[in-house]
Length: 507
Image (cartoon, rainbow, N blue to C red; front, side):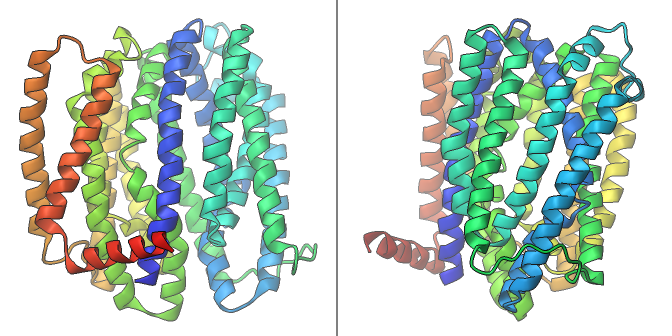
């Protein structure tokens, strides 16, 4: 029960910060669309630049940053602070050195780099990207360092500080910076300036938090005494997983440019503004669940881990369903907020929403596998998935364009979740739901029927679905789903958790 309450508390903090950022991010992109001089082109350039950064980012730590989430809790259990110190020191400096090295190589060989991407010198995209490349490279260095330090902090279970600085304080700062630069006609360059200043703020805050954690027992020393075979294998797998994911995310945008235009990349990029909302509950839980899984696995308490998996998969599905329904049902109205040209992304939005529902359905399956020494199997699944996605992208994008890219990614998401669950069941005999799964199905079925009837009636009464109607509709969707879940599938454990949470709040 204590671990459930701990995960709920920290996940709620992460979720609150994440939702705050997502809503602000949505308004932020809405602001960009209506204030950038050529919004579809500018957002396409920005999406391409960020994809290049993300493609290179795994090479800044070669997976050792991600390994922090697995091994820092393990070393904490063993009270091995010396290994933690040496690990953090080496990885942080290695990331800084490698990031600067890659930035230098790309900057001094940018013509060759762009030719690899099939961006020709006479294209408008080449001229704009070339002028913005130094800014993107600075941003890459800052983001790589922030990312690895974030992993250190998550390993220490400092979710609250990460969310507070990056979400509650940092993101509004970025919004204000962008508004300032756009007001003074910096256009897309101003957007990137704001990203750089924001990244400096986040990096400074994370370094401050990390120094406070380590200051009592920290001694600066470059040492490799922490390197063991299991750490190298885990980091290598994590690196390859990260690279394959980044490569897939880059390839779809590159192919859309190849067979459509940079403007279509801007439309495609905007659809992910809504997709980001779907896995919020799951991501919030996984952030704190990952180090806890590592601790439980180290103590060999598999029954407790299975119980936690049951509980959080059930409520992840219930609390994520309203967002999935809302995005699919109001897909056209949501995209119309950005402008009529963005409605072209409707099918893309629906396809990706359905695909991400499968991630929600199986819960924290991949996180559990990674934290319980099954990371090699996860890697094999990811390689298999990536090969299929790449094959489908080359086949489907030339013919079906954005929808082909979305369908390719969707197939990859579904396949990886199915295979990961099969591995989890085979290895640990874990199942995502208990005997009350049929009750959850009834909640979703009844909620869907009631919501469809309600919104069909609403659309007959109003001619235009303004933003305030959509907000009220989303709130209504959550109210109906939660009420039905309380009536139909509220277990004794759920009641105990609620009572304990209320008691803690009162204290």
